[in-house]
Length: 174
Image (cartoon, rainbow, N blue to C red; front, side, top):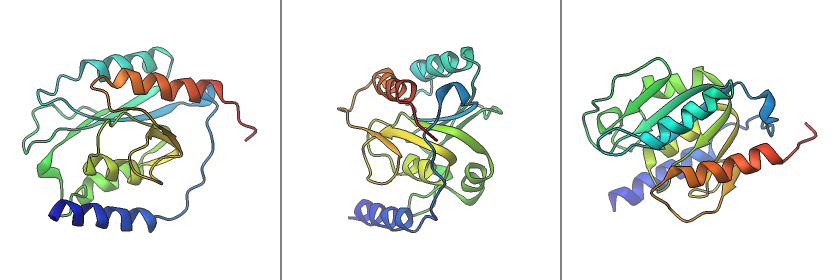
C-alpha cells in the first residue's frame, strides 16, 4: 500500500514538471550523455561499464548514475559516476535534495535510461535530469521522449541497442 502511495506521489510530481525544450538529437552532435541504470547488488555492472566505454570511444562525455537496492553503497563516487542507494532517498522514494540539485544543475544532450524494471529512485533521476532528449524503456508514461517497448531483460545491452538504433537512424529536421 505504501509503495502505491509513493508511485502516486511520483506521478503527481511528474505531471507538475515544467515544460522542457525537447529536441530530437542528431547523434553526431551529441556531446554529453547521462546513462542511468539499475545496479547489480555487487555493484560490478560490467554491461554498463562496457556501454559507457563504447560511448566514450565514440567521443562522448558519459556520466553514469546507478541505483542499488540497499542502504549502503560501496562504489566510490567518481567525477563522472554516481551510485545511489536507499540512504539517498526520502520517505516518498524521491532523491535527496543534493542529488536532485546535481541532476538539475548539469546539462546533458541525451539521457539513456537502461532501467529494466520499475524503480522509483531512477524514475525520479530521469524526471529531474536536465536533458535535451530522454530515451528509455516504456515503464512510466511521460517520463521519456522516446519510449522503447521491450520485455524486461537482465541484460541492458538489448535495451541499449534498441535505443541506439532509433537515435542513430532517425533524422530530425530540428
